[in-house]
Amino acid sequence: MAENNQEAPKNPNNSGTEVHLNDDKHPREDSFQGATLEISGDGVPRDPEVDFAGPGLNRNRPGSTIGRQSVRSTTSQTSMKPGGFQSEKQTETFFSYKKELDGKVLGNWLLAEIDHWDNEREKLLLLTENSLLVFRYNFINSTIQEKRRIMLHIIDTIHVGDFTYPEWSIMPVVSADHSHGGIQIKWNRGELPSFGQRWNPWCSTIPWVSLAHHPILYNPKETETITYNVDEFYEALIDAISKAYSRKRPGEKVTVAEGPILIESYASLTSMVFNQSSVGYCKDRNGLCF
Image (cartoon, rainbow, N blue to C red):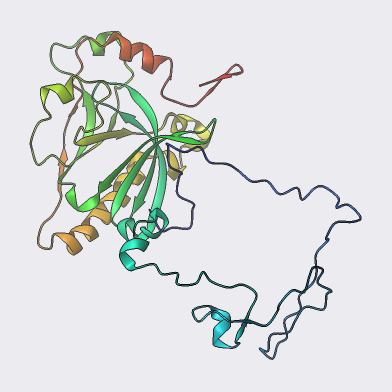
C-alpha cells in the first residue's frame, strides 16, 4: 500500500475495529497506575525504579540478535520464536510490506467521478509516486466500498474539457447536472470497451475514469480549497506521471488532449434521478444517512 504520512484506507471486505483507550476514567485503587522510566543522558540504559509484581520476572533473558537493544546490551525483556524465519518472498505477502508498489503519497483529493452510465459519485483519491488509488469511501460508517489502483506508467491519455452527450441524447434537455468541465484519465491505448462492458452499469473494468470538482467546491468558503479542486489534482497528476514515465517508459510522454469529454448516455432517467438526489454522496438527509 502507499507510503505516506497518512493512514491508508482499510480493506473493504473487512470491517475495522476501533480500539478506544479509557483515558477519561479514573483507575481503581487496586489497579496498576504506571511507572516512570528515567533515561540517563550518558546513554547507559537503567532499570526503572519500580517494584515488579509477579512470580519472578526474569530480566536477564538472552537478547535478540536483531533488535536495537542487542547493539548495546545482551539482555531483553522478550524472546523470539525458536527457529522463526521469514524469507523476503514470504514477507512480501503481507500487504503492509508492499509500500514499494505505490511509493510515497504525493497528495489526496475528494472529487466527483462520472461513470460510463452518467452516474456521479464521491471518490477519494490518493496520488502516489507510482500509482493513483481511487476509493469509494463511506464517510458515515468509515468503510471502503470500492477500490481501484491505476499505475501511472500505464496511463496514456488525459482529456481536459467540458462534458458533452451524444448528438441524439435527451440528457442535456432533461438534466443539466454535467454541464461543466473535468478531466478523463485513460489507459486503453485507443481501444474501445466491449459491448458488455459499456452496457453493464456495474462494470469496474472500464479503462478510464472521469473526474470533476466536488460539489463542496461551489461553497464560497471552499473555492480556494485544494482538496475539492480537480484542476489542482490535474496539475499534480501530470507531474507525477511525467516522473513515472521517466522511470518506467523513458523517451515516451503521456498525451494531453483538450476538447469535449463524451458521456455516452442517451436517455438515462435512472442516472438523472440518481444524480439529482445525490445518492452517490455521503450526506445527512434530515437524520437519514446513506
